[in-house]
Image 1 (spheres, rainbow, N blue to C red):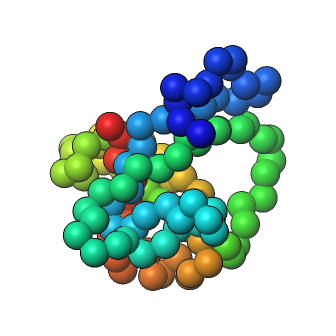
Image 2: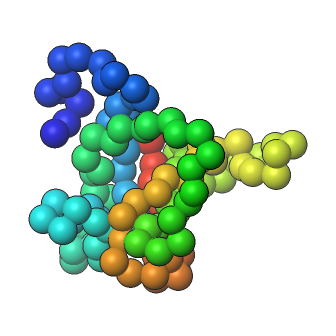
Length: 112
């Protein structure tokens, strides 16, 4: 599903479209992160729904906490929070691989 198919707002949370992966791709069949195909630098993520949940326990396996940046350069100035002003948030993406695989590959998400 993409953002153009949405006709109503969700009961809870929000939908986000226009996210792009660098260094990996979204496997539509397996519904998880997968290595990039040859000559594929950036791949689109499907529509994402953010759902707020109080006191949620973060899973220890089966996800990659992928950093989301505003622009491709990943550069920004260091803010008082200790993060780059270009950094947005970590996005939990389902993965069959350990997080270290994606960290070493430099996998990140960018806003379109």
